[in-house]
Amino acid sequence: MAYAYNSKIYLAEAVLNVKDLAGQTAFYTQVIGLEILSQTATEVVLGAGNKPLVHLIETNREEAVKSSYGLYHMAILLPSREDLADVFKHIAELDYPFVGAADHGYSEALYLEDLEGNGIELYRDKPVAEWDIREDGRIVGVTEELSAQEIYEMGRKVEPFVIAKDTRMGHIHLSVKDSQLATAFYQDVLELADKYTIPSASWIASGDYHHHLAVNEWGGKNLFKRDKDMPGLAYYVVEVEEKGDLIGIVERANNRGAKVKWLSSNELTVEDKDGILTRVRKIVIISDFLVVTIDITFKTAIMVIVIKVITNKLNNFNN
Image 1: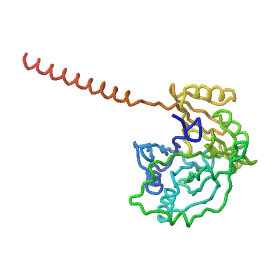
Image 2: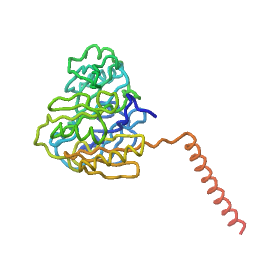
Image 3: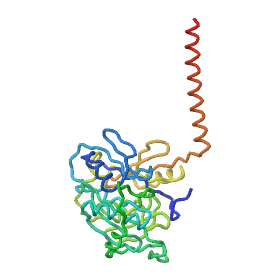
Image 4: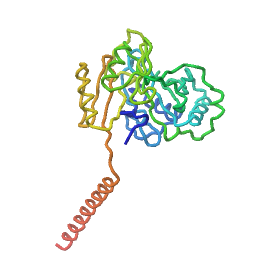
């Protein structure tokens, strides 16, 4: 299995600590159009096409999201311009406020915040032929006016609204204390390459994508370091294909003095200097043959149990 753009990583879900679980669940389903994939009294997993994108965890802490370093925005990638138009039209007609919109050269993007101030980007990628790719591999982005009216008029009225099933997490943009230290850390630990950097921000990626991660210090130098259960970003998830990729990440993180915690043989977290957690897991590919084998084995076991129960009842009856 190869990831798009020759990347060695795949961004899975963003996990948020939220103060109002019911309200935030309503926002992500009714405004963004995600579907509830699983739910408990304190957690909700939402996604598209049965793929998790946003995981909400209830917290009792009351700090403001923007009082600490962490998430600047999570960027949800729509599969086409038409799909971006549909969600644009849907949100606009709900009269929910956007905080920005831009043509970035390689993408077209809409920006908003959820009910607690977590940043969200909804975007679609332009064809690679339209990207400003330099000889050294850098991909230069711009911030120009979005053709908002044109995109809005493309939108279809979808009732009930559900975001396109092939939607996925495109990138994660982090708020950090020092963008130059942060970009060096993530480039090293996750083996990402610099795609575009300015003094206060950096956009980095694996392979030929414009960016999987971005970091900026626009929040200033005096925000709080992230702590357990703080409202906002709990962690975000990166997937890799090989166990060796996990081992390499651990070695490079240890060399930088970062905190590493193994959660299982195939999953770990890395903590940066701002307390931001990256959860990295090796994907587990189950073949169709294995699934069938497990299914047959399970059914066989059930049949054996049923036969034993019936046999015992007959023996008791005969006795």
